[in-house]
Image (tube, rainbow, N blue to C red):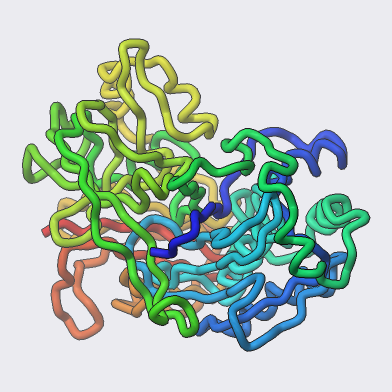
Length: 458
């Protein structure tokens, strides 16, 4: 791990509406953080170099910032790597700071999750934007796309990003400040509460992750989860760091600390579990705190929406997959509308909701849709349905968490508007049965693209 304290942030969503530019700017600021001047040097070592450079160019050409490229690690280092099935697809970190000035930061993309070139570009753009001091915008995007749009398809200029940067850097010089001027800035300058990006408690870091899955309804959360359980934490311990090669960093690797948590299952509310004790993989720990999924504490009880990670461990599907159980009822870790509706409810009431039959398949095909159905009676591993709003050339493929193609299910023209249903037998293109794990069905059409997470348990 790096010796200096780090603050991390990745894309998420604010629910507040943008009533005016002033409100947008306030909501889009990451506390007091910003670069000390408007010239911000960037070093791009990403394998997806063109997508990362395209994202850097958005900020360079469309805002008041100047973002020249260099060949050494400096104000901003941009890279990517296979971090595994962590649940997040991007993280931005402040590696060094003085007061509220960001002196060095990392913008990273997790290539274990498969996106289009457009999608990767959007994630790079969002992570770099955080290192200019921007938090999450209410449209969920960077220069377009994000949670409220399909990041794989849409990538257009969002004017408020440009306006927010102009406001944040009003009066800040373009030329780099003298090193001694930065070093002499009082460490407590412009201090705001730590929760809003101000002074960091010694030894603690914070993170907000851009999660690969963000269910919008309880039904979607249930469909994504292999099992929903109420469970008690019986042990918390440090896990091995996530390590990927990055030229120029310490030892030429990037390290992200992890936490592993041992749970005892009290009740299975939905789905199935093979045992009564399981281990939860958790990115982050007491020193590296993920805001939407903070460290777990021994003795606490949770309702968890789980999917298989690897080697018998599980992870929560998203921030929407964790609710703390207290004497006053459930306390979700996410503020999304359907989770907020569960605040204060009992575990028994939630179990009743989960036991209700899933909504019937919509009959209209007015928009592109992709979903997993109940386990088919035929014995096939997965049943998938999708709706085409119009006649289209269609590709439906299965990928593993490393982004490797496992199987092509559909490749050709299909009629629309209508629904299609098919089954995947759980075999790869060579007829071999895939092992347990998480896979992704990606639907590509002329109307856009959809991705679905699929957990296979043998």
